Length: 451
Image 1 (cartoon, rainbow, N blue to C red):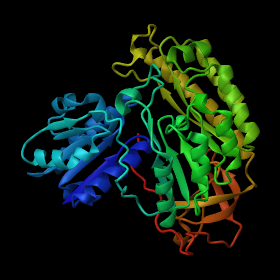
Image 2 (cartoon, rainbow, N blue to C red):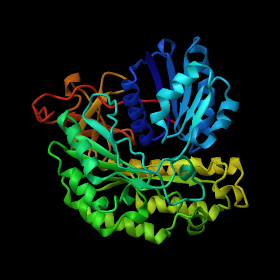
Image 3 (cartoon, rainbow, N blue to C red):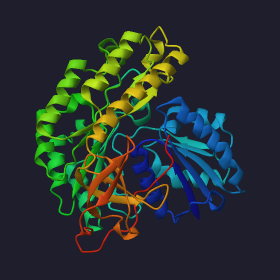
Image 4 (tube, one colour):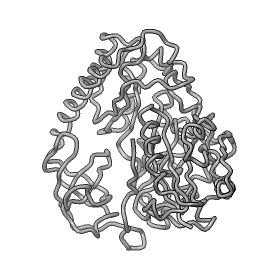
């Protein structure tokens, strides 16, 4: 039996897809990249924005063409959790709908679907961390490790608490055991995942303890995490970041808005001043740290003055990059009841101005890096041309020329140019640093469709 799986959305969904494939391997499935050859077709979905859901609905119509008699088409993830049985009515070609806590039931649900049953499993299970499941990860030097699920913040625009449930953390010893097993198979870079990852607390250990423990695993050369919440960067966490040599000098620090009134309506639970203080504390303890962020424009009630406050924050912080979005209403979120909706054309125009500001700031920072030398991890073949794609500790993408055997190794690279967002570089060393056993890592990062 063969399974075809597409993944949309965040790194957490990528990690969940690896769990699903691990579970299905137990059932005797092998993965295929050809939907026409699959007995089971699955789409792991995102629900953060309406565009993501509409794209999935369209894709389900395309995948229907590949269904043969006895084949099963299923929807997984956040969109599945949000819509539940409604999705079965909306998309008659779908046989099963399973939320992030229901993946253990996949085998039984698929068997039922082959008998004509169309079912859902969208029950939250506060105990579920899939500790006994070995994810089916692609070979490579990097891996995602989920340490925390769910979110308790309940920002007014966000659907995540409804799709991922309440916050809960894995036991520190379980996380460290997983990282040790990854290091034993040649992984040298680990990214810790959670909806608000730095709020991690297993009842005994907090996120600072986790960073120190993960960073101390032999063979782990780089440690990253995403996505944190500004409120949870305690002095203990920042001290741990500064004191763990493997900790990379990059933080994705979502701000969403630079306007105090908008932040209040978003229920972000911090002020502009508190956010800037977090930035200052990070930069003081972690010199050279790169900062990226998420920003929403067009939130209900946003005035031109509010927008300009956001744009000024981008300039004041000096972000290395930002993911920018127009506000997307999500059913059942409190923001849908906030008056004074921003017209779509106004939001679109603000988004374009914000993107230009972000690009200008990033371009200025990146031009200042040309000529400097950085350690990079070579990740994969570039999407275009014959170059290799590599990444610095500060999360900058560098394209270099070199043999495929460099993938999975670390090189010293001098940055020779920039497009404003990515860099070109030349290797300045003769090293080939790979696995602790002396073999270089094979393969690269898993690249899956995203929205």
